[in-house]
Amino acid sequence: MQYYNDTSEQMLLDAEAVTIGIKGDDVEMCRNCKILRNDAGNLVVDVIPRLNAKHVAELPADAMVSQAADGELAVFIDPTDPASQLIRQLWRDQERLIRESN
Image (cartoon, rainbow, N blue to C red):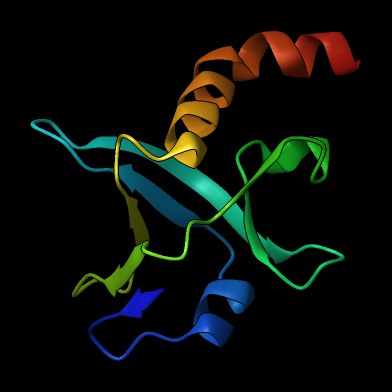
């Protein structure tokens, strides 16, 4: 992973919320995600934190991490990466997934 603007892996793990940006012609933003470490020690994004890590996607090794002037942390992923496909689908389906979990 590439870290910019004085960010670090620990900052991602400690953050209350992280924005996932899927790069492309238009950057698609998935907000209020949580970064966790899975049992294998890899960083994963919990796309729907309300469901307590039920729907996660592993962050790709070439992801870029940056911090905005207001302190918001963002992870940028290439749109062709399989993780971006999964994140997009979970983000779009989150309302239904939350309803089904109740």
